[in-house]
Length: 341
Image 1 (cartoon, helix red, strand yellow):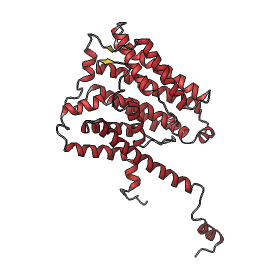
Image 2 (cartoon, rainbow, N blue to C red):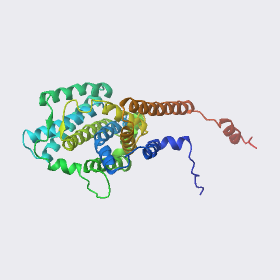
Image 3 (cartoon, rainbow, N blue to C red):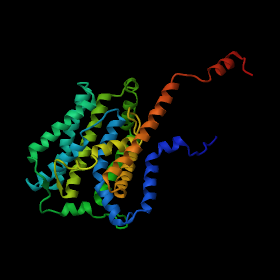
Image 4 (cartoon, rainbow, N blue to C red):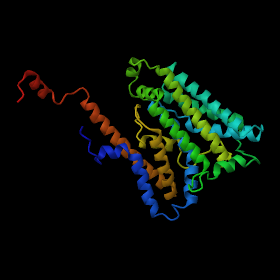
């Protein structure tokens, strides 16, 4: 049996571009003062965990061939709901987080039904749902900022380092654990394979007997529930939350979208990995700590995004150009007719 030779070529670099991106950032970090301190690593990974939940939601939907633009508002609503139920109503944090997650399930279910049963494009559905969720936030809070109150026990837990020799907060470790669980589900279960098939070719999925409507609806539920859950944790981790959370500087939604594409998730669906998106978001978080100015962050991220989109577009064009062709047709004819030498 012939073993395939390992080659580092353009295709290999493209397949693992998220990891190369992180490696480049880590190399640049060597020349940045106080970059590799435990405090900086803890702060960067902890503060960047919220966007990782958004990237998780956006990636699972895009793999299925859909877009979920509600991820940022869903996470903000989850944070506000969790803090409000605890500080105002006095409910335990576990109950508050479960209620916030349940609201995410309801919003995801509504998105899925509108997309699958009413055949409205996911872009339009989730764009409209953004305003519904934001309106609900204003009704619930009256535009006021909410805080955790006087109970700091859970806040301290999420901020502390669970593993002494690793400079990572409990919030980041919980985020990472959930992302890897979703990765295992998508890679090694029938549901995960169905999601990839639905996103790759809806007609093929139908011929294979896959209930695409159910798969699509479940994907939207996972996205909204994960963002609401992550947002609730982020509200406790940060100690406060407001309706305008994350709207200063680069929008978290745009960062999540960028990381999803840079991480290798195909815009047309059927290809991608939540772990690659997670790696890209870690790289972007460290990139932001290197380039303090927002304009430099925007410039670098935009250049990387444009390069990835251009490469994917050219690759897709070349692939589609050869679909259905048989470059060795003449050779096959000679072999079948016995005229080949």
